[in-house]
Image (cartoon, rainbow, N blue to C red; front, side, top):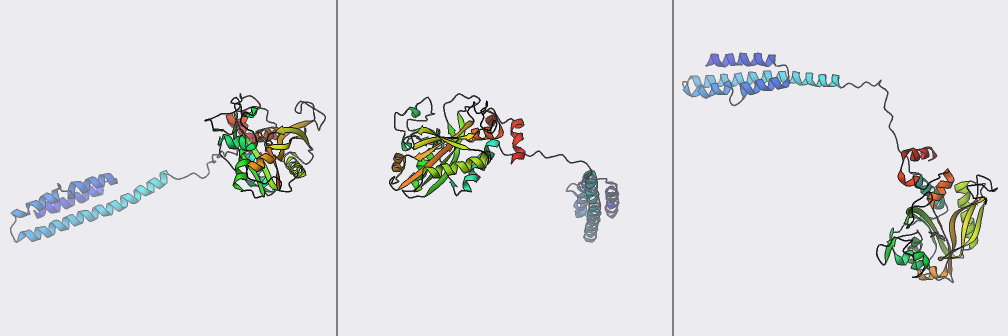
Length: 345
Ligand code: DAH
């Protein structure tokens, strides 16, 4: 038995030395030290030995097992180190290779123009207000002095969801909501950017969904000259200090008096060209003094408070500013179009 054990030790150590990788080494471990391996088998035969020999052989068997284990562990450490080194070598990074440029995106031109307009008004002390796109008929129309039966409420123009709800057709309902929340107390100074929806057939200048920015100021002693001064600052900051503005009388149910604002045409300098249709002026937005009915419906005392409001379409403003000729470019997201705005940020 002693011989068997010694030769097993010898044999196992040779096999360990021959093992080239961790898998082969593990095979040796299983073969010699496993439950069905020869060392275990040899130990099972101990019963047949005399009482005198048994402890001697037991000690020897343990010694053999220990020696084999030790050799395996030593070899394992060597093989593991080798494996790591091999891996490191195969994975070396060639830092001299030229890098691949990472393509970065840019803001959408509409986002840029909306943020530019927001910043401009924030600079004049305004805060931003928002409202729901699925709006109550009351805020979209009624609270803005557009009673039931008014032509602007035509089913042809609006996407109704139910009798009393629709996709808002403008951002003006945010005016009504903000005033209502103010509980009859000024001042209010807000701009409200957001999406609006109309039943229009899409073409170069129309879209069933587009963006608007609404402005509202309510306080004591707000006059038409405040509106004009504000719009003048806006136009010059947005389109250039050399631009003139012109207010034309107009009509909106929620303002009285109502105006439309034009800016002088940059292309022809006022001479008249194709862009301004020969007039020298380009229409930019609608505005006016908040109608007393609108103030009263929202809980404001119209003998004490007055206000002005304006509404504009950022799509149109960016089209004029950047010379974009088709509103659909904004929504089709062709990167050849979008990329052109990256340096303008
Ligand atoms: N809501 C109007 C529209 O969609 C735009 C507008 C005009 C808003 C005059 C105003 C305003 O606040 O005073 O055409």
